[in-house]
Image 1 (tube, helix red, strand yellow):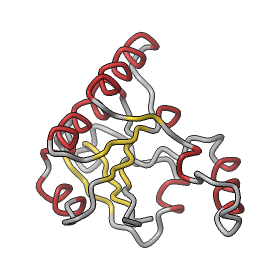
Image 2 (cartoon, helix red, strand yellow):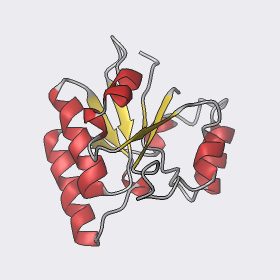
Image 3 (cartoon, helix red, strand yellow):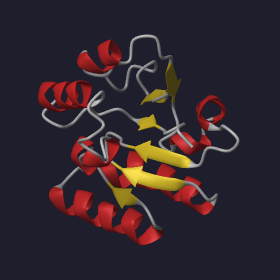
Image 4 (cartoon, helix red, strand yellow):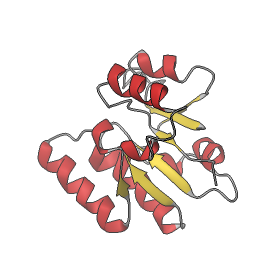
Length: 150
């Protein structure tokens, strides 16, 4: 599955780099460093995501109410299907997290984790799926990735 991984304000020194297991798991994928809260507004990020004919995005972020909510609304409005990894994002409070999840759901986003596996009969993907789930307690914390299978 192709991955678009970005950070916000890491190069400015305001935020810390991703936890070590993320770049390790994403070895070979570039990291898009940005300053915008809404990743959808970053030109280089958009170039990395935009792929004609592919309209499914799986998203997660640092803060639910900002880093996830804002960039979820834009692709939904542009006709993308947006799937939100609710267990790989957190808010500044439980109330902020829950309210932001309700907002993106009302806008049309869908929650998932096991949706990536979809079918246990797909036995060739089970070991990697379970390894990732166990290694990260079900929270890989990857900002954006999308399904190119269609």
